[in-house]
Image 1 (cartoon, each protein chain N blue to C red):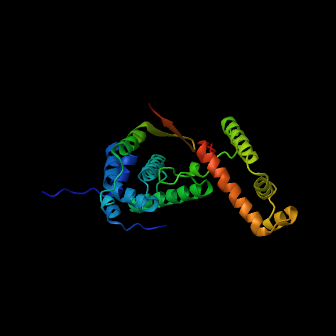
Image 2: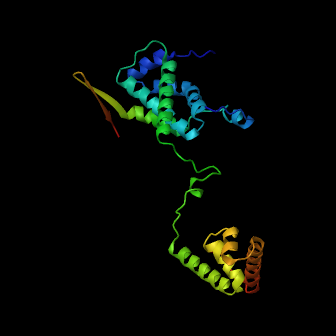
Image 3: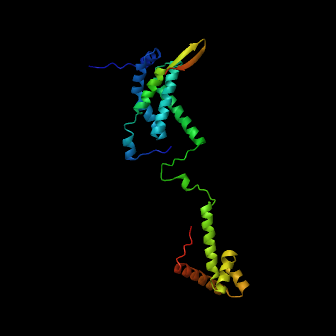
Length: 48
Length: 194
């Protein structure tokens, strides 16, 4: 893969983090997901 | 006052036991490292965002299914998932290369329908008719050379043999034929393009 060494690129990579909505989505996804154990099977269900 | 940092392992256990805040702490703590790692491979913010999201979806599902084997290495485990997803992304992209039209180069500038549409066909016919009428106006010797050279694709050597003149004369007639055509075209402002 090509490496990019330009100054702009280095500056722009200093503050790399995901968007707030991505993190919120993950937290909501986690809250909505529940795993039900049934005998030896595991079922994933989503709550709205 | 010194804040005590809760270790990842404890947060993982708390999360498995139902504490959603523990997950928030884990994501907040590691999001920059994970996202930077992904971005350093794909160099695309949107793709990095997608892979970051998929990484943590895998993390969440594994933890909720109680399938995570805690060895005190939460971050390396997350990084490994991210790494695998980056590889998946490149594999998928190699199979189906995408053309990015956001740059100066557009694939549609080199791909075009070679067939003429109805309008272009009519224009082409009109141009050809005009050229034919102009050629008919030329003196006989010049017209003869031009027809043989352009329409019959004969060499000047062949033309000279058929017409019984020297190659230089045939070349001269061709030259005058073209000059005369240009003169008539300029004089009458004829447009011979589509």
